[in-house]
Image (cartoon, rainbow, N blue to C red):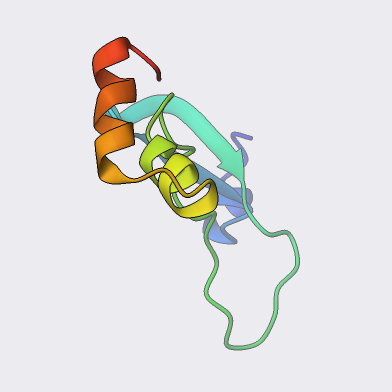
Length: 77
């Protein structure tokens, strides 16, 4: 993970923590295969606990805004 060539080839990438920003030593594996004209990266950080709830409960399960508000008020996360 510390080998400079891995960083240059973007096979090991720094990860930005959603709350803490850049954290020394927080790394992830990139794509080890090199393809012509391809951007390398690892996407976004995983969502925080409860962050995608509105999309899941609303879009996927069909709960309306009023139901979501009632659930939030009841402590459903």
